[in-house]
Image (cartoon, rainbow over all chains, first blue to last red; front, side):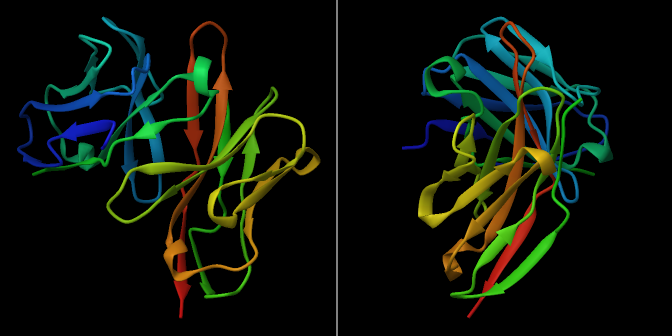
Length: 115
Length: 116
C-alpha cells in the first residue's frame, strides 16, 4: 500500500490560475518535501517541512507556496500558474533521525501542464 | 553549495553486459551519497547509500557503488544488467546544514536502456 500519495496525478491548468497539489503520507515521518522534475534538470527542491505548521524554502521556491497543516499532509500551491511551471511534481517524506539522512520515500508524481 | 554531475544523459547496454553510471559531486564537507532509481511512471526509490566506512557499498538487485574521495566520484556499477534495469538513475548528495535541515541535491539523471 502506497505510503506517500499525491493528488491529482495529472492536471491541466490555465495561465494565471491557482493550482494546489496535495500530498498525504502514512509513514509517520516528520520531514516532507516537494520536488519538481524537468527534462535536463533532474529533481529540484521547491519547499520542505520538518514539522507541522512550518515550511522552509528549498532551492527554487519562487512562484510556489507550501502548507503543512498536519504531519501527514503537505500541499504545494501555485497562486498564479505560469507556463514555466509545467513539470512533474514529486512529494516525498523522510525520517532522518530513525532511518538515516537521505532515505526519502516518494509519491508517484503529479504531472502539471499549464496552458 | 553542493552539486552533482552525471555526465551521461543516456546510456545503452546489452542485456548481460556490465554497467557503470558515472557521478561526480561537489561538497565542502563530508558527503552522504546516494543512488536512486526511477522506473517508468513511478516515483524514485533508493538503490543504495554511502555514509562512511567501506567505500564500496552494496545495494538492491546487484548494484554497487564506490566512493572515491580523491576523485569526488560515486559511480554506480552492476556486473550483469537485465532488461528490467531499464530506468532513470539519479545520483544525489545530502546536506546536513545543522539543526533540522536535511536536503537532498540530485543530479540530472541518466536514462539507462538495456537492449536484448
